[in-house]
Amino acid sequence: MIKVGLIGCGFMGAMHANCYRSLAGVEVAAVADIRPEKAAALAQGATVYADGMDLIAEADVDVIDICLPTFLHAKYALAAMDKVRYVFVEKPVALTVNEGEAMLAKAREVGCFVQVGQVIRFWDEYVALRDMVKSNKYGRVVNANFRRISPRPDWGWQDWLLDASLSGGAAQDLHIHDIDYVLSVFGEPEAFFSVKNTLSETNSYVNTLLRYHDKAITVEGTWDLPGCHPFEATFRVVFEKAVVENAGGKFLLYTNDGVEEIVLEKATVGTAAAGGNISDLGGYYNELKYFCEKVAAGEPIEQATLADGVSSLKFLKKELSFV
Ligand SMILES: NC(=O)c1ccc[n+]([C@@H]2O[C@H](COP(=O)([O-])OP(=O)(O)OC[C@H]3O[C@@H](n4cnc5c(N)ncnc54)[C@H](O)[C@@H]3O)[C@@H](O)[C@H]2O)c1
Image 1 (cartoon, rainbow, N blue to C red):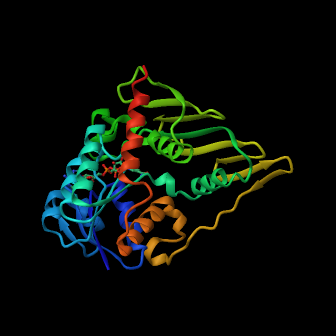
Image 2: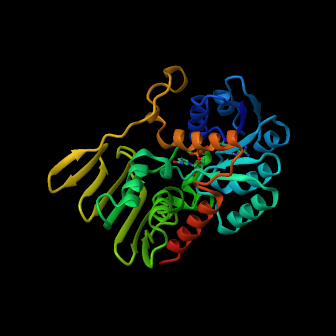
Image 3: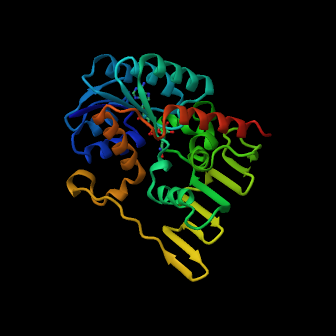
């Protein structure tokens, strides 16, 4: 049985607890949150700690999962690496590149395997798209657009998300999902240009144009929308022989023969554990399943690694350096 210690029981901590409880051979053994009611809500028999450091010092766990606000990632991840061999840390990996580099150095020093919650790499439609690109099934990619737009995230503990000095703003918190994905599939571009909302301190809008020798990609993100606007994560990828679009809850393939819906096989689990089809948990389930399989096998993490997370953060910071 893999015993998980979960630090941070807010929005993402609840999602992770749900996923772990859907996985065979995995137990959420300890939870920590400075808001006792949040920890109690997720506990279901797990040992409860009032602070993440108490869990790291005292809990009997094999892995530690850090779902804390971004400005706390480095402090807790560094401490966790001294305790366990496997650490999961939510994205963005850290608030600053220096913190990310310190985490990399520590992981290497103590031999800890770290996965970063760059969950889009595990999201079914995005996994399918990556396979299409790699297999050249529809020829080369000619151009692409990735977009992630959201109402203002006002659910965070003490509104930490809306303070760019704690979260990095929409660019670092939201848009990094698509930038990390694009870098993981297409690599670093030859050149790029980025614009952001210069009137706002919260980097609440960013749009980046990446130039590769044979294609152009745009990546847009914002969380400046009113609460009544739905969250949307979409892409349109133009290949030489087809266009693939993921929008409005549909995954569509356009060719000269017409348009068809791409139906993906999604894993299912028992209703008691996850409350229905596992696609409800989407890539979160897939990424934590991968993580736990690596823990069980005692193997290194090879997807969404700490180095990947730091590399995407470095790129993101370069985007923000454009005025
Ligand atoms: N992968 C994704 O799609 C995704 C989505 C949302 C958030 N996130 C990331 O997950 C992380 C957490 O975000 P969230 O939305 O869950 O925030 P949140 O504010 O809902 O939850 C954070 C929790 O940490 C607790 N906390 C604060 N200090 C603590 C401490 N010292 N010890 C223990 N608990 C403490 C807070 O009480 C709160 O419950 C962030 O890095 C965020 O960027 C990722």
